[in-house]
Length: 471
Image 1 (cartoon, rainbow, N blue to C red):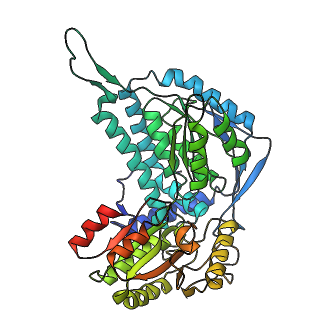
Image 2: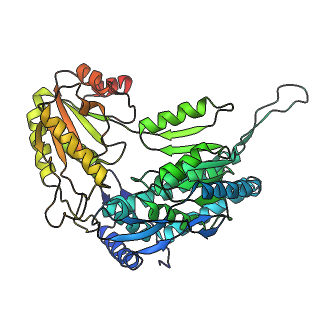
Image 3: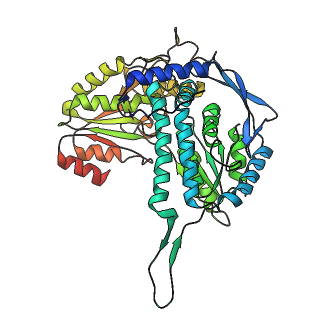
């Protein structure tokens, strides 16, 4: 595919801008042609550096247009997961003894390989997840940032072996951090490369080995990470098994050969994993990234133009399919009408369509289940007296009829304790309520089981200080 390395472009994810937009579009267009020539192929899994087939395959189709067959992927079995864990265990004996400086060199090599094929990876993400161009490119940039950050941390901390001073006499005290063993990395669909690459890179740099399971909706993206790492790592250090959560995922969670788990997904599953692994005879470490029901507060002194820009981008970027999305807004009553009018106007102007096109900002949600979640939430809002300010419909006419397209949706008029203010939906729906004081807004912001992100738009330094102190 790509054969030369070019200096990376700087993508600003929050505003969806890049420093060299025309070059980005040229590179992305060329990558689309390369990726389109590979559509429909059959892809293996990778265990101990070897391509492996399962007893059955499953199709992966694009949410942009389900007539597009991205590829056929392997339905891994529990037995194949056990083989992958055994391969990772075998590789661990060697890899854990490699000096940390050499492990850093290996990951720097992987970073160069990532840069070499970065555009192809971004194009695959766009096809498979339905991200727009800048979102897809931004995800690959995030992977590169992860690689660089963890390498830099290993170097800055000199491999995490530190003298602790002299307790007295001839005694010496040294802090030594050692690798743990074999880690399972269970990745989500919404950042299928970044949220596999981050934990995998950290684990591998520390001397661990990994068995990775991509989300069932994004196996191709997960395998692109293997394409990168396999050019640098010894066989067995990074293994990928594709397939369903009930087989591949469950075996990773059940198997005693797994020493630690990284999971990104729902709060329900994440909390279940924490509870189950805490009560084992020897508790097993579990690193969890779960959901959010993220509030934004808009106060009277806010720049309303900036506030509406920020809410719109956060709420509807990536179709709201990110745990950090703004999904509820509390706006001070005196500026509510102006805020809502401007936000509705900007939301109506969002260009929806095939996100691989350069002028499209919003693509499809990931699958039919997400569409169902969206439609049920809209119906619930209407039933309970909510007003649909904009959106509220699945898009079924051309060119949307063969994909999973829904309108970005703003809802107000619901009670402030309504389910839609409480539950993460992971679709492009945001609910609004007006407030009278900052105290009320902060109290409402804190009325949630989640604790991920929050934001405030204000020009008042005292309000900013209260926000950071109390939210």
